[in-house]
Image (tube, rainbow, N blue to C red; front, side):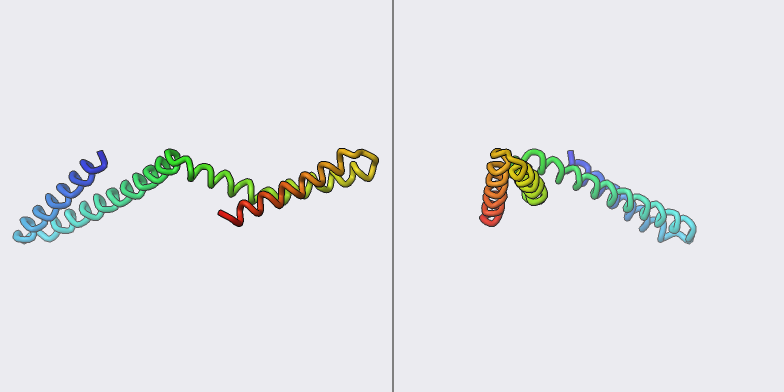
Length: 124
């Protein structure tokens, strides 16, 4: 479908170029300016359409490639792992200070999880 669109745009460009040559032979300058305006308008529309189609193609390539989705999710985990592990660690220390042994376990698990996430990220 995209190839047909490119071929049609090339045909339109060739048609406009042929029409410009025929009109250039005549002595009507205002017609030439109208064709130039038409050519600029069509060229702008084609460029805009091409940009939008490239964005759509990039989106579908991203969706259909599972490795890109997994890497995108992984970078989100790495980005927010510090604050999440820090909050769990602080809450764990506070609960441990108040007498709960689970707080100490939560603190150790949080620090270990953060270290593992950063180590894996360093390998990627």
